[in-house]
Image (cartoon, rainbow, N blue to C red):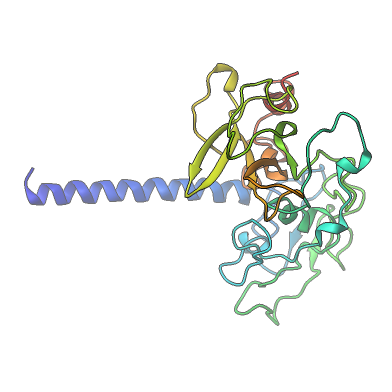
Length: 293
């Protein structure tokens, strides 16, 4: 191939990559813009509970309610998190019920889950951000509390209403466990995958894993019963890695944990309530991806 032909081919290839990246970013943005996670003036559509969705009059921005390019909260394992966090000890968790069927070890509320709870525990206004829209951490033209919609408690405080299911509160004993070992434990960096039935709790699906930069990435294939594709995607059940620095007492290796975002993708409107796998297309499809008995 002549030099100018190589150059033209390279240019076309780069243009194609750019188009694909733009389409991918556009699809993510479209999903958020059409969802109840778009809290700005550009938000459209009904609320998750059938009423009028939350809408804040202070900005038309979409991403700012969760993310900031500068000065994010590094205590949350979420990219550039733009919200203050509650203390892990503020939460009561499912294991505290003492049920005999719960056999996993539990870490403090953290990882990506504590980021989700910075809205969904109902203790802080949805517009309580570290870096407000505009220049600088505090923007004098940005006034908190200017809300409309029936998902909020009132226009004066902007917190999630206490009577809706989206407000989980600080008592998580009646919610699906988070911060727990997947399958009751047994999977770790030294034993990264076990056949179904050989984990501490045998009633869970087998996990897949990859290693990236020394970090284990675990997931459960959505289509594992028919072979799956061997890739960790947002449409699978994503497990989150913790180690001795942020795991349970006595943990020495990386292990896979279940978190809020294992089941929910906050950026996707593919399924109701941001579920990664539909529970209606296949009855209890999400539940039965992990729970096999």
